[in-house]
Figure 1 (cartoon, rainbow, N blue to C red):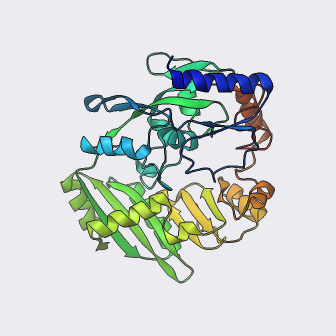
Figure 2 (tube, one colour):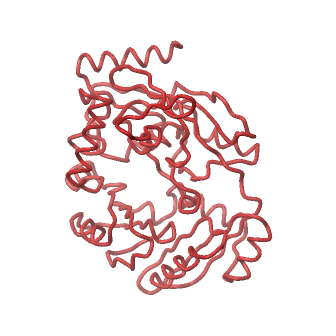
Figure 3 (cartoon, rainbow, N blue to C red):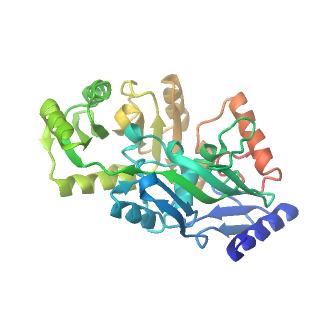
Length: 361
């Protein structure tokens, strides 16, 4: 066991024994996400960094949690590969551990899959100081769960992610971005229709208002497939530089709409009609909708629940607003019980990121 890991383990053990809360953090680029953590000390994972193994022919990369996300992506790009879920870089310093712990994905998520879909294995430091390995060569599950994927989106509440092994994919040979003028309802119908066809659509987004808007679609794949889809769909073709900048702005939330506060993220079935809640930006073929500006949390969550989805207060105006409204959609009684059982298994004293997801977890 190396010195860095020994130090991390000792600090966690001391917190467990003394029942002192620890706030796990990496690069700090996603600290806004979730409820504020009242803590006695910070467990900084950023020094625990470095690529462990990368075999391009195997399409797998393994690295420590503190490894800069940009470093991993640059290394993959040199080999013509990528993290297919297109993780966001909200600012400099994003780490691989934070990428998995938050499970936030970018525009390509609807076509490629979620962060959890690409997690092959993890190494975890739990609240009792145990170093546990899940997935890969050694498979250990808890109560029937695939723990490696369970850690995706756990926000450090189950333990400190030490290492991650991810499946990677080849970068597309060809890409093209198309733009269309249309209103929200028409855009949703188009996205759903195209999603059911053999088209190489890797990302889509609609932005606008009551008077109209524009739908932007990215095609990715072989040159022949992209060319055929362009001919089928029509629309204005954006220059590569403009298109790249636009998709990065959407991914990294520098797009003007995504700087609004508060900012709600609505996850609904892609076929859901316009919700009529206010200014909206739609991604993932209709399955992810961003709602910007002051809203009643109760009204938003009721409307989304009626559509069969859930609503997250992604960025609140203030800490008080986040605590009052709650960040994540309320859990049903059975699901809340599952969350508590998992928390008790990994962190019986509740010392790791207490309250980050829900006040009682």
